[in-house]
Image (cartoon, rainbow, N blue to C red; front, side, top):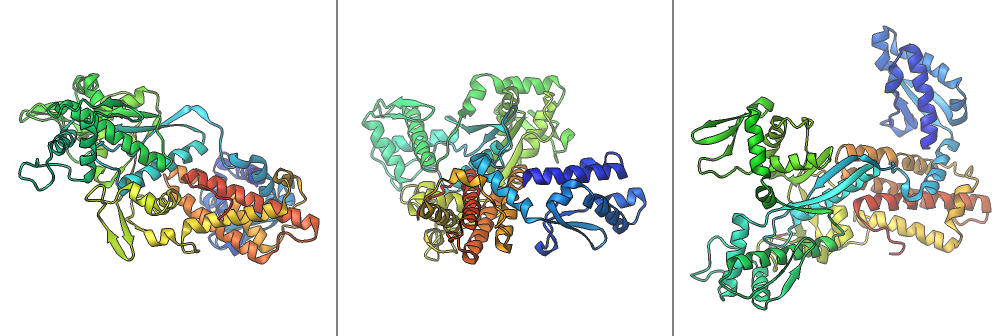
Length: 558
């Protein structure tokens, strides 16, 4: 129905241009809030009425007559009705909706997907966990969000690049090294000589044992062989970082998440990027010295107060390397950057953007975009789970996957807006009923596959079938909903909203289940049977495509 919609919009735009030159650029169809009002709606008459000094309802009536005279409307539109102060509601003919089935079956996995434009490059930074321990549930939410947003942008023609940013030096990494060294010396949490601060999880003992055994560990971005020298703290540090990066890789692989690049925060210092960025800001006249510290004039760019860049002790505040890092993103050709981070990073947004504007590199004011998420609570048997045997003080992503499944974790963590708190119910994720949203959607796909298998024909032949038999209310509703998939994808990408995809899939599954309950598919009438098979095959394709965006499998059997 994409082509049908484009035809109808083109006619509407032409009619609007006749009324007011340029008005056709804003021609658009909306979905009526009440399904009974029609399939499409337009508010064009109400928008044009005031500047044209006309009654909106009379304007709508005139538009109605003009539209109904157009061949495209005569072919595809059953009725054009005026409602309220000037709403124009359109009721499509069954044939218009039936075109959706052909479009889906023809495009298959590319339905709703736009061609890649290599000039539109976006870097999405997510997870970015320092290698100090196992990935926790919050990292899992970030991994699901980041990967799904990457997939969404890919459907809209963006050239997507996934990046993981972390530090292999600094205070947290030093604590990791001293904790591992203490374990290697036979100490454990609670002992008199156990360091403070320290990481107390059992995984530290595993790292220490492998270091003393002189093992080699390899991750996606580094490899290190342990010396076994208990006094060589730097060797312990490098081994522990490689060990935990390898563990992170295992977790992410189990979660079906991968990255194009791993970027080290420490490289910003070793390459001179931090110093060069500070020098650039100074040269631009955007800094000043006060109380022995170097300040950024961030209030010039909307921040509520100026920010310290370099403290009196000579160390940089945490947002300075962030500014250097995002300058590097821009210089690497990424016209858009998206950061998926926890809500605790909210305070850094204004100062990073201010630093980028002050640098005078031609970066747009809203660069980078931020998607902030809340943490996740885990419930099991009606009680909150807070402890992991492996991590000691929190539930890990691996725990969640092992307790349920990759698909359940992904779908559940993507089923709410990122900035809303989420309670992950283990029991619900394991339930095989309609209350479990991922089961409900996957079951709809598997149910269709079983019907197609029972038929035994070639699905590829269905796109050429006579679809005129698809005229029941349930079939019409199912086709109309499938037709909304491309716009839903585009809007979800614009709003960084993979939860919209999850919601849509649940709605599509419900519409299919309603259709299945209303009409037998494998009937004796060959024409009717093939039309209905084409409809359900198209539905399965859209379910498959949407689940793929979320990184969730579409099983053929359950």
